[in-house]
Length: 433
Length: 143
Image (cartoon, rainbow over the protein chains, first blue to last red):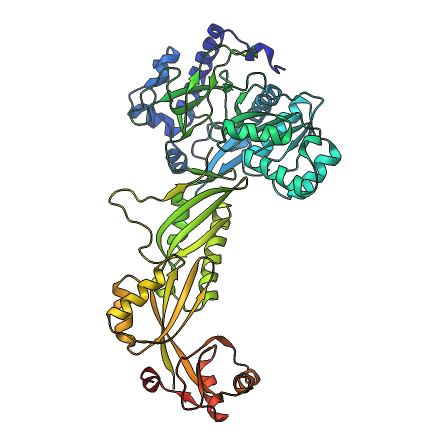
């Protein structure tokens, strides 16, 4: 079902006209209200009035996650706090999270786009949506929630965790749509099996999965184990949250970007040059309707390509292919963004260990497992095993407190972690997506 | 009469223990007693050797994390109840054993056990009061 027939099927020429007009309005506004953008535009020698065609977008400077951190917490908001009704945040690399805000209209826009996304993924107002994305500062839970209500579906705000109870709810409430991270979905199937529940006997028809990288192979596995049709959803809090792009369940071949609200570009991450359709590169977004937190040419660090071919579902919006990787060292572990530098800052604050570490990510069963190898400091060495184990536990607790991700800590001997000439090998990702 | 014990942090990987023994052999250090405490990730090797300084220096130079701890070498009567007698007096004095292991050589007719207590000084006094003999380092290293 197409939720917003008028906009989702706009002919290209009409869409481009809307994009240009909205882009110009957004640029005028950020130039006037956000000192960061005014300064950056001035440094680049460009004014909002220089943007006469969509193609002129490339004249504008990029915005990076570092810019967001430099303006922490509210420096890039384009409206007074009086008009902000919601604040979300995601983890950042130095302990400072990335903070975003929404006006009442932004929340409404987001809900509408999420309603479009849920509908594209197979949901209707008659459905019961089991929403296992985390509720809180993370945009996943509330983003889906508002969209589900906007669509008119019944939403179960179950959030993440307490897996056994989730299975009971699934059995008793009969939800027909599942929204969760793909890895948690596979975990749910395992727990269900332990409880003697076959997922395929439940009432699910469609699953809308995202917030972490996954693959066609995983889609096959999820569909086989759950009996539902699985689609990919994409979003990030800096741009809005979930509902920036969605696969339609008809084609399941790339995610339609809601281009009437977000302009996607693919750039060469080294040169910044804009790449043609089909070429892989870094995904860049410009929001053109957001009020509280508009963002101009935001470098997502996600690698993908854009596909302008028409789709069997009837939507005219172009599609981004499945995200195939990152241009930075960010890891997504059970849906949580983790930068090696965050682990480093935790370790730096502890006297017991040297700041030489290595992160090893595995997928055991269906869950991501993070192991942190860290060199034991000379002074902290004790000949009592429990003393050493308590150091491991302390590190593990600090990582959990600071990053919200569980990690197994392994103390290793000094110099055990290879020092290479150039960049240390900080991350070994054994997961196969 | 405390005895110095050296300890080495070891990752659980093949050949790591053999590296320690090779280094000590090459340095002409004789291992008098040892114990290895391990978890799934790492181990702690505890050693009584005839030359602590040399053992520590060569191991450190080879990149090992080495520590030094004071332990007690206690004579244990080599008959049923011999160990129990010692543990009993210590228990009654509120002293805990962190770990213990056996020394290879006998001292006369007695066995020798290496003990690490949570209160080393107090343990020494309690043992002395109960006429339980401890062996000093100098004697032990050359036994």
